[in-house]
Length: 391
Ligand code: PLP
Image (cartoon, rainbow, N blue to C red; front, side, top):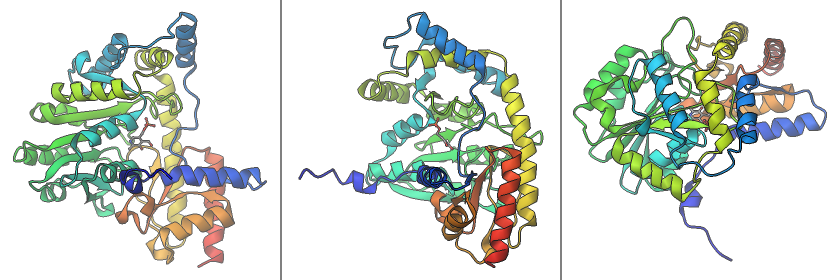
């Protein structure tokens, strides 16, 4: 019997997919399940983006493209970054990849090896830790605290850096907490990083267009002093409701870019050509669908937070970004994963237990508000009834 290399004993996954499978199975068995576990917008991709893909297929864009992506899309990404973030990047530093995850995968492969330490947010997107462990590097969690509004702390992050630290992963606006890190905190982090010139940075800004209450997104790209070691991660999945298209983009300093290009040549070759043309339409076309989606998420966000704060033993700070709420459930007396599982099986509400996002996620649930306001209200009612029955 052939055996796998040990790295596959260490690789993890995203429990959100298992929750989705279980919720789907329950629904197929006739149960009425409300899914607040899902990490993708419930809106369709804007029609003009779909049309651009259809046109590209009709126009004969059927072959390989350059591994780093077609130039018009790399130029559109550079324009988007200039418009939104007021930062100049060269299209030659932009790489088109099949989803935000692929940038993460490449960056962690570049810096992870036994003996290396990689810092990552906890609670945070579970693939960070999984991939770090896959490479044999040591995962070092950066605690993300409710008391800090779920922003990362520059001081705590800098204090975790050792001579073995090779990469620091940051994420704002954040999954699973909806936290947005204020500019002053990023300023402090960047200032402190001057003392650690050999540490690379991966800034996951996939929710960069998704902030509320007039909160602005502050990109790490805006700091020239770290640009020679910063990998910027973004993509179309969330902003343009395109999770299934697999379209992401990243900005890399030249030496890392070349490594990323080679990884692309050795693995996916290029992103689906029609998807890339659709990406140009998404970035350069009208942004009203994005604005409408954000207005709807904002409305639901307030419904979720208000409803959660009415439930016995639950408190929830108002998230400033993304489309997740991260309520504190410690006072219910439930362990988070047990509560998530009981809510799904007994109340027909799918959520995700905080520990699926790291050890510091105990005591919390993640609720996505990528579901209708009506369903969110029904889910909150069911949660209230469940907690009343199971104090
Ligand atoms: N980064 C974060 C923080 C995410 O939450 C996600 C998706 O949930 C991704 C990256 C991956 O996005 P993609 O679907 O484009 O690979």
